[in-house]
Image (cartoon, rainbow, N blue to C red; front, side, top):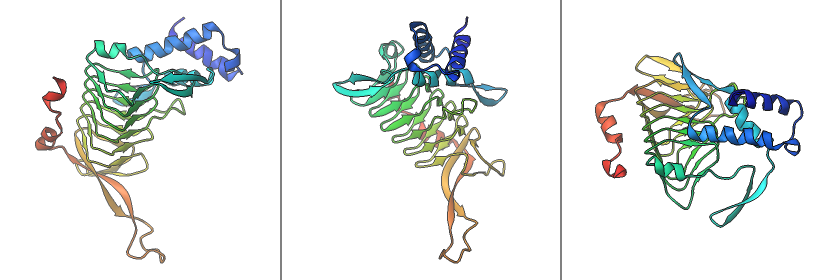
Length: 276
């Protein structure tokens, strides 16, 4: 049987009433093999097919099984006791591929894939099922949520939050495509897709509930930022502006997207010294 079929079979058993108390060594072997495949980048929670990002539902099922079929245990990391169903990820393979993670706060949970020549600055957290591509910078105080897909050569500015989307299993998670730069303090949530080669200004909130005013195509879109855009936050008039209780009008958040200019791209390039 393949890993996918093993996971799907275990998912069916879980839906039929299997609990952590009933788990056998064979079941745990399947869960461990699944985590190893995630970490190696052999499987992923979502992929781009025919131009659209789609979830691999069985992979997300495998992540959920690792929560539902394991017991919480006391653990220790860096002299600090904690309790979780999973240990933290081993990181020896990161050094082999030229990736570095700084101490005292860089936390990578089991089942997370981190590519080669990447940099993770402390404190930062990468959750199970997340995928961080080659050459990507995860800066201080960043969080990469469960199953989030971060492309290659991405820059996540300090204090950036990347949400995940673990459930429902059929929904694609947050995706940040290749060569994107997110300014400090950005938030990307609820399955939003940031198109490749885009530059997003500081403290911008990207979520399907906030409209993106795309000045390139002259359209209002939701849930995605097209490729090669420069995006930043603005406020637009709200439909409740004329309410008697509101003095001076009311405004709601929005995102404005324009073409990326060459000087904007140059300003976001990382210094070569980071790679020396």
